Length: 212
Image: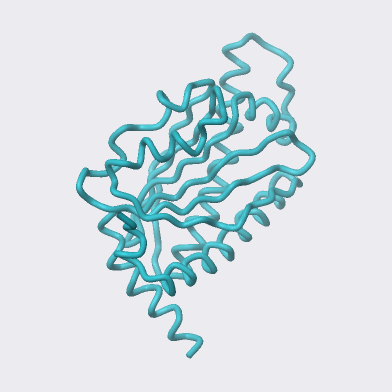
C-alpha cells in the first residue's frame, strides 16, 4: 500500500520537499557558522509509512553500517514527531576536533563522554535548524525534549521499536549528509506523528496561497 499517495498528494509532497530544501539549507548554514565546516545535505526524500513499520524501515536505511551512533530528539507543537540523526560508529571522535577538543587524552570513559557531548551538540544544531525552520515556514512553533545519544551500537539495538502507536501513519523526511574535509556521513530522519498529518496538509495549502 502506498500510504504517501493515500494521505498526501503528489503536489503536497512536492511542496513539502521544497520547504525541506530550504530548512536543510538553513541547517547547513547554521552548522558552518558554529564549527566552520560545511555539511552537504542530499535532496530530501519523503515517504509515508504505517507507524508499526517504522523501526524496520529505519534499520533498513542504515544497514550498511555495522555499528552506529544516533542522536534522537522529540519535538512538540502542531508539527510534532521525532528526529533521528544517525552516524557511522566513531563519527563523534572525527568531529570532536571541530570543537577544539583533543580526543587523544584520557581513558575510554572520558573519550566516550566527549564523543557523546560532541554528537549532542551537532544534533542540537542540525535537528534544531531543520525542524525549527520547517515549522517556521509552516507557521508553527515547536519545543524539544532533551536529546538522547547512543554511541557504538548496532542498528537493531539503537532504534526504538515503539516510535508511534500502531495502526497510525507517519511521514518520514530523510536526507543524507556528508561533512566536507571529514570522513563523516550519515542520515537525518524527521518522523512526523499521525496527529500532525491533517495540520500539515492545511499548512502546506496555506503556504502555497502566499504565491498565488
